[in-house]
Amino acid sequence: MHKSEKSVCLYHRRNTFWRLRPVVLLPNKDNAVPSSEVNTDPSGRIEVAVVGDLTDNAVDIVDKLLAIEVGSHCTIYFDSPGGNPYTANSLVTIMRLRGLQATGVVTGECSSAAVWPFAACRRRLVTTSSVLLFHPMKWQSEEQVGIREAAEWSRHFSSLEIEMDNLLIDLFGVKQDADVANLVREWCNQHRYVTGREVAEAGLAELIDLQPLAELRE
Image (cartoon, rainbow, N blue to C red; front, side, top):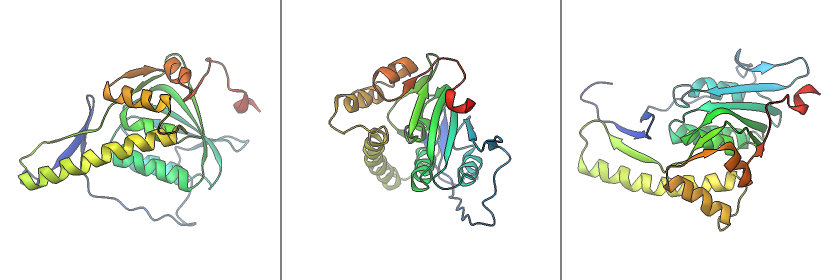
């Protein structure tokens, strides 16, 4: 990025997210070929690994999701510290609009923006060693910006934070006025690291042992 350019970035305690120029993907039957990173076994089961920063790997992750047939079942393994909330929202949109019957599994960490696509999965699995970080969205400027631009970004993200929190609760299949919805909001406000067991006890996922999944052996 040129030093004279202005930038606003999103961040949490572990990552910094730059505002990037959008990349538009226009898939069709000719170019929607399976990515080499999508694992399809002989029985037709599709497995996708979401590992690392969502924003850094956005193109690859989107390519994997677009390679899955509309309405198909798939398993998505999460070990991600998060990323840009716009990227998270894009993944959620693709998953839901394409009707993917996804089973999400937190194999390690599923933090920050990565929680949204995990919540978008139709079935969510965690282990006792799974960890999810909930926190409110924040932004800062790495360069000097004008007061009008800063004020507009502040207004925009104040609204976006509320919308994203409400979306997360909806994706978990919880009513906005339910006790567990308030619990999720509390986790976000507290910048809370939540264990897999706690998530399961809240009814937001299923706690599983480190044993082969029955559906993968069928």
